Image (tube, rainbow over all chains, first blue to last red; front, side, top):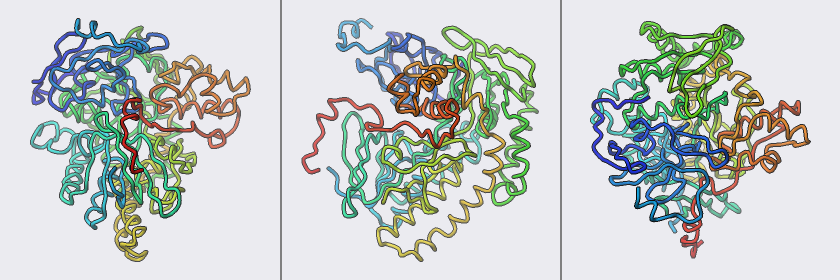
Length: 105
Length: 472
């Protein structure tokens, strides 16, 4: 598990699966989610197995999440922005995104 | 489209920063392109401004990290053009000596074409994949990934188990201790045979900057012991346990079976050159039997087999951050010669100190490479172990297609989809080549590597469609 250093103030907020998460400006989405205690970021398209960031440097693509309705974004390569809506990526991406489901989150 | 540059430098780690700084200092038209939001690469990640922002963290990361601050400050002083958060997705090498290389990059969902007379690839290294049972479970990360959490977000691991070998493993442990983090254990996989093989190279390792590295390494190990961190030696048979996430780790230490509870395991077995860009350009790579990796072939100046494409730093063979910094300036001096700014004698004079400096920092490598040679079980894992994380292909499946007559990685890819997922083979490539070589009873160099094609990172069709290539 991870903890933030005391001098690393977390003062911006975004949502993961509708839940509020705080982050420090400059954090990647992956770092902020791991710091918040999240374990599984996505389910694989092949077996549905849970995955989380492995490399944190843009090489492994295991941190893929859906950000503001766009699937397969690299959480480790995307900086947190206030109000960002992040969702767990489940299996293969559907061809049509569902705006209703997005709003419901 | 942007007009032609004298040089596009790819990667803002030590090699890229040093190259771009020297080129800008000599008035060359240079642009540094990098994926991260700030300069420094992975080794000096987020270093810029950290003294003011997080002094405690800056102090804990140590003097080697602090050196990056000087490097970034110099880079800013000479004002090289800099594109952050920009991902290179294709490089088309020049067609003829008068033509320019084309570098396609993506930033914020928009693509752009840069043209350049020279390309300096300074994309460095990535951590060697560590395929052990359970390495795909949440809670398993690379040591480098945990260090990125520290540097870029000030987020500290608690109760982590560090497993593997190599300088980074001990450096990360030391940094975590300095920040007051608790480390559950360090599992050292260094084999006795490695120590014996390394010993012969110890005298050479004392030369140049080698002695300093050895002292630092010993000091780190001593610090761990003083802090009371349990260190298990001669570790083999690591397996991460858990169904939906890591809950435990099992292993053998000196042959004795052991079991520890852990929800975070950092694995590390050294680093290897990042090959994606150099392979896609068509640079010749050779197999380094000591470092157990492919690397782009270069001459002493960094020239690859493709005219006007230079490789500086760990991409041309692992040498570490300081050697990479020298290599960046050496490559920049060669670019100045290629541009006609300097003649050969001028280049030699410009690079003399860096050639000496690089040699001094490389003096310890033959020793380190043997001491921390990766275990065979990581290079060629057991059948049940997942090798391709994206498409979930096991080592056994790779061995199976070789039995059916598959000769190389590209064929294995078409049979099994290994290497066809979003990471484009970055995680499985080195292992797949090793497995096929083993199963065929030939050398890895004969088996080769995946053919790497653009786009080097996924881009949307919309982004391609929106490209303005009217002037291209």
